[in-house]
Length: 328
Ligand code: 5GP
Ligand code: MN
Image (cartoon, rainbow, N blue to C red; front, top):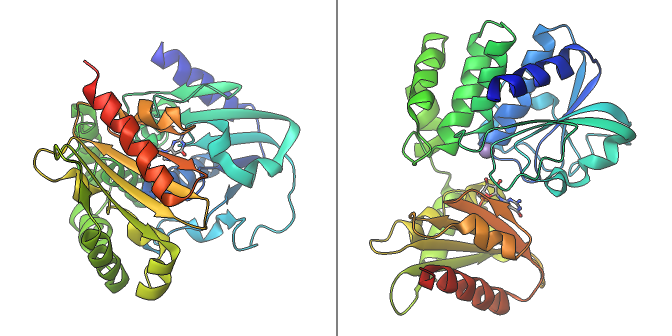
């Protein structure tokens, strides 16, 4: 039962102290929001904690409370590993998604796994998983309620950010009645909805526009126009001044084409490493396709990483999507 899961997670937190909070490699809006909200919750309970991610906080999310305190392995701000016994993983679909932060887990570490990805394998000692939750931030909101804590503006802003980014601005099919009622409470608690939407969804950097121009110039459609894809590489980023976070949202362009069932973005970094992002209009379960290549995610948004040259990756992934489309 969901309420039992909430109680078990609350007990995990209440009975321990000195936590490590981690999220997934290349953290996104929900990952960073969930990280700082978990920190906020522990602080309210008088607990100590350290926040750690493999990748840096995207600059667009630097406004979130104490996001500047999240240690990053990529920039060395973390220093040498210190083993933690109590670990909270947020928004990580599987253990591998924690990346190198797991160097900081003590050999006898116990994990609380808080996540909303249907491909989550329940790797925690305690698992707080709700697969139809729009965002991990939604689950944290329920945990805050369960623990009887009162929201303040900072926490409300962070939870709203997680909901806003993982629902594409309250538009995707995961925008449930619960999400909207939560959004209402978060606005009442002081989250500034229009400002967050403008900052997180509307505003584009010059680099983002330049890399969009390049990406769209390479857009390809399958013969039946049901699959569309484009690619970018690290040279594009260097030459346009765009950052990795500027690529977020790029995959929506192929997906949004009328008639297209699956949109794909290939991000090449290095000769043999391609990150694949897939978005489905609904017919194809792209999480299942991503799992064929060791990745995962949600039915309509999923990803994976392949270690082959780009043309081969494009061929393999497009073929797998085509096969999934042709299945009854
Ligand atoms: P994105 O395409 O935006 O990177 O990711 C879409 C969704 O798929 C996100 O929920 C993300 O957590 C998940 N995802 C992306 N890449 C991977 C991966 O390599 N493995 C797993 N398990 N999930 C992924
Ligand atoms: Mn998420």
